[in-house]
Length: 374
Ligand SMILES: Nc1ncnc2c1ncn2[C@@H]1O[C@H](COP(=O)(O)OP(=O)(O)OP(=O)(O)O)[C@@H](O)[C@H]1O
Image (cartoon, rainbow, N blue to C red; front, side, top):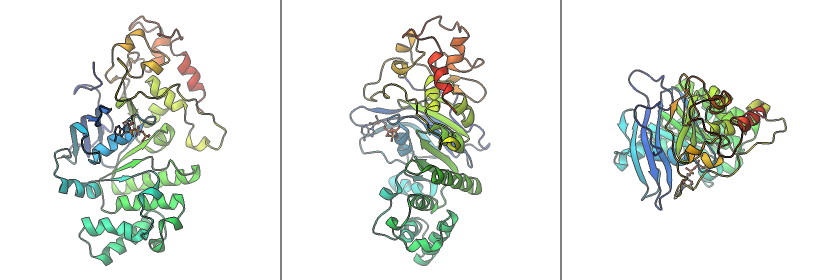
């Protein structure tokens, strides 16, 4: 079986969208880089206006590739299949002129590391004004005025419009990036690790800012992070990616506090709550790394690292399956009524009658990992 999800399986995210359909609707998206790296495989997700979807996963799981596919930012020669509908418009079928317009006014992106994204030799006011000039047909004076308004909107004095990027702190630069993303009144913002380089206090401020803007302007948000706690603190729903697939999704708090997939559980145990980050914390990483997307393992791609894998997991991949109300997980041990992967096994789940292939007591490693979560 491949990682591609089928139409009748539980589908990602924000199912509580408006009756006229979600703002973003992604179906069966697959991305293969030149050279054969299958970085995204069969992803379904949707985001409604005013809703916030978090996408979590370790480095290399395909989060940024997914984000770049949404805005058609992938390198030439990359194969992309499936469907991306933004406000009902087919993104993969758009002509380039339309794609460029949509990148600002339809969906805009906030990247990590604002210092690298901002142009060091231009004043920030001019950088914010540029897309307004280009895409909103504004006069230079109106674009500059709007840039100053946007700076105030993200909590910076309008006078900072005259500053150069190096004159701002990391948190201020990230606010500028958010102001730029808002410049053309996008319907959707994709924020890729927007707070990773910032200290904890500033991180929390930026997250609150993003939350406020999304609520005030009814913008849809996709926030990408390896840090499940950050996403749980900010988003309504969470999708956990592993080896290019969504392996778990559901309400953000529930996924963080009680993940159903062994990978989701390992990820949530690795990050303390944002409010607890001043305490000493040793992340309990998973052994090993995500697989090379050009040479994926057979069966469930997580099985070589999974503490509760069955022999059959090396052979059979699992589609997303019902894991409780509004939840789904791609694990053979998940039972919609019983819940998590470890739980079913602990209760003597007779689904397969198999023992973990490494002889570990089912669920034991997970329970230990959970106990480290504050
Ligand atoms: N241009 C490329 N050509 C070939 N493979 C690529 C390319 N860009 C990314 N990849 C591979 O695709 C996989 C997914 O990468 P991606 O950057 O999307 O993951 P990620 O989860 O966003 O990780 P990170 O958090 O480090 O950005 C990785 O194995 C990566 O090496």
